[in-house]
Length: 134
Image (cartoon, rainbow, N blue to C red; front, side):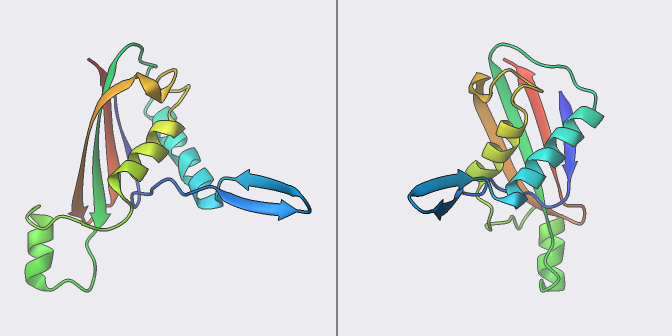
């Protein structure tokens, strides 16, 4: 299964906590909920089937090339010589995407037994997702 999530790659946000009196309530940040919903929409629009068994996932994360880069740096970024070393972290990108696909692409993300993630620069920010049975 293959599909693309347009836009800047996002990572799973840490839960937030609020308290009223002696009760503490944890909640998911709005930006995380919005991105998880965006991932679900992108998956559903690609009309993919649910997978079962042991799965391998591959994510290619493309970040916008910063406007502050020099011409040489922009060229190196476009040619994949210069790669992003910025947030979000790779593990947080996997977490938000894999959690979003629970019950849609697979029963549970515990079925993913291996994963490869790469970060690149591009004029077209996005995350390309590919998942297949091992």
